[in-house]
Figure 1 (cartoon, rainbow, N blue to C red):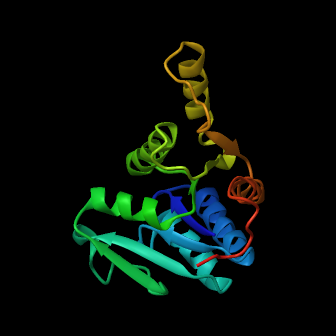
Figure 2: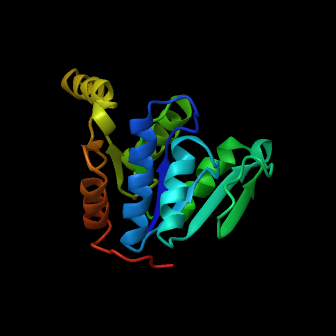
Figure 3: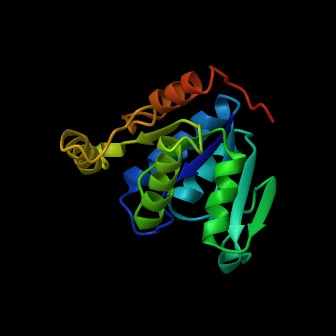
Length: 186
């Protein structure tokens, strides 16, 4: 499978988030999947890419013009897809991916996650999405989404946000949702 990963590019995080990103990248590659991501070589993004690369996995970076610089793009990408802007980057990543994994991140990560989730709810994007809840990072989001559902603001249907505590559990769920494929189908 081609797994699109949304996560932070920040270099100012607690080390536990970087370690979780590295572990997720390794697990992804060991299972024979390939990575689709934003291309940055730092932050959790960079750690996921290092994990994939270190285990022999394929990496596709999708990079908007604003970040098309050698100091930005991770060096071991098998493919670099350049886009005009952030909007077209999201659309390109959505088209290339078979499913989505969300790791800890800020506003950009949440934007990408909510867009994919919304498109799934509307039936425009029928691809599984799961959230790696490293050290309870997404507990407040889970509570908010549960409140939205209780109060009638949200009807998940087939696109419920699913939270997982480990990389293995998240990957198991994505594989099951995508028909049980454990190897890259490209």
